[in-house]
Amino acid sequence: MDLPAQIIQTTAWILNRLPNQLSRSTHLKYDLQLDSIDLTLLIVKLEEHFKVMLSAQEIDGIETIADLQNKFQAHLS
Image (cartoon, rainbow, N blue to C red):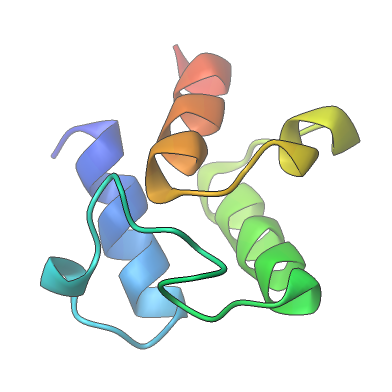
């Protein structure tokens, strides 16, 4: 499974959703109703899962599943 698909699978698992409910264009705040605390917890769990540490600047720019995929892809490439 490629990394973008792994991000969707893992995010769905963390948020207790079905993977087919998420796509690259899914907005974390507006579509999934994540507040800043929920988003922070999601990112921390993804960082632990993928053994990656994002900077505060990178985290500030995350709004969609595509943003998550791009940030983690940059660290794992």
